[in-house]
Image (cartoon, rainbow, N blue to C red; front, side, top):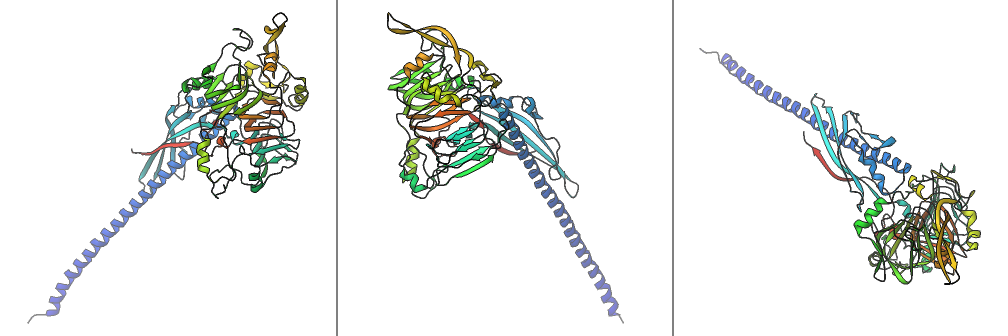
Length: 578
């Protein structure tokens, strides 16, 4: 007879062993899957870590380059030629002179070894309207995953470093020195700023913010002494001044003009200095003038075609006033189109139409009222702001930029010098360092601060002929910093007999804005190092918001005002495959 229990045992054991084998295979597979998944996850995480480390290195390098470029700009604050800093480069460095910025080499970032290199550069051509340097920066990050697998990622960016209109034009009144609002009759419809201490008399009006910055050259902390008044929005609207900047919000409650007046004021002392660019070599502006086809016309006649270096008002081909020009728009408007360069002095008054800038190789003399034929206007409150933006975009705008000074009024009048002298001589004016390119107009490495001193140049002297009852150009005589090479006779002959009451222009120069005005409106902006303007009764500075860096009706390159470094912009990004 058979033993059934033994037979059953012999059957169950193989089944159990088979099940254990299957379970083992499944468990082993699962374990292998988990290990592979963990390894893959580790590689994936390390991959992302490398990519982020490479991007972090790029971002840091962009900031470092921008910092060094701004330091170079601060030391050599000329205008268009600053981007030459980018022309000298290798795969490991960028910049020139003592401002070379070393690129990072194998510098750890979040545990990854990172190398940043410069693989190429593209520069705008000399005289181009838009000035830029585009750098191709490549960052490679390498790291081991937890399982020991080496992971490497490379990212590449093309970064544009460019110049844009300087932020000093965001202010109605910007002084690269001590600032002062005194006399009780000053109103600024816009922000004011000084790279130095700012003095307020408590009786003036600043419908905006006032800022003062520390100045190591002057040894001052950037304090604000005194106070100023400001108007509420209803009061500001009730002034009914169409040339003052618009408000934010508008009557509709929108925020069209981010840089508009909001009805409040703020005094901000002890700020960081805002670098003011110098007008350097005007050669780039000459190229831009020719490339843009810039002109000054009057009554259909072309007075300046790009640049002017012809005979001066004396008519003498080799006279001391060579390159000087008189622009008189009292009978026919002066028509400006784009940026033009005048090698010598500019003597100007009357009506102006168009959009553009005049760059003077020396001084600009405003000898009479200077007004726009088609001025911008901002209603207050404004119920149709978008239409206002569109209309003002085509309205007139003139920039006046001088390597020397802007002189207002008739300086040949003895009363002019009596009024101005104390504010254009030491101790009010402190010695200061000059741009090297201004040596040709008498400003050596350090200027004494005395604008009444002789500048080593000459001016045309006129003599009166009794027979013909006329004045004739004669000898060349010594010239002072504030005097024109065209001669005192030309200034007196063209000067308005009454006090100047309106100036429509953006005023900018390397040195001083000085002179006398009556009860006056200055519509645009006043940007200079030293300021010695004596007014009668009141003076209003109405900031032209079209100069604003974030204004919707901002005039970008139409008038080509001096530039400063813009925030870097990423033009393209890609991950570079091995």
